[in-house]
Image (cartoon, rainbow, N blue to C red; front, side, top):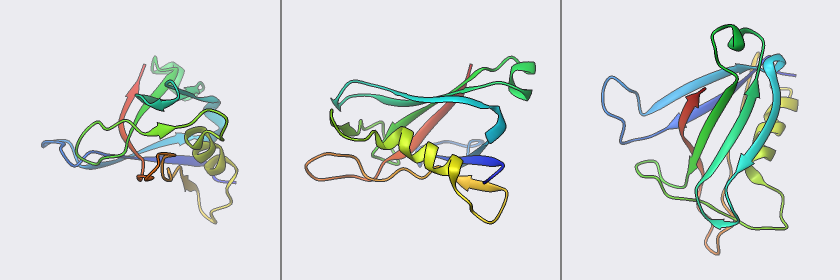
Length: 127
């Protein structure tokens, strides 16, 4: 099992000093729960990772990642009711992976639209 989960936050519209791709590492032992927000259909979606341990000492208890189907704009993915949520499934798969190293990447797949589009983590906010 990996020690860290890596979230690649991608935004090709990011201006300097921000990078188009930022890797966020979260210690698996600090993750308490993973959930997703957003109504069924093509609405805004987020992954909410509740954390403790070292992070709470810094004043953080939640990592919220927004999801998009575009690298350059906020485009809401389509996720249908009655199917496995691909957002939480990606994080949980990374948490249980055996990558042969210390980090496993939470990699999103395609959304559930009629013409599926690749999903990306677009922003990350600690609170």
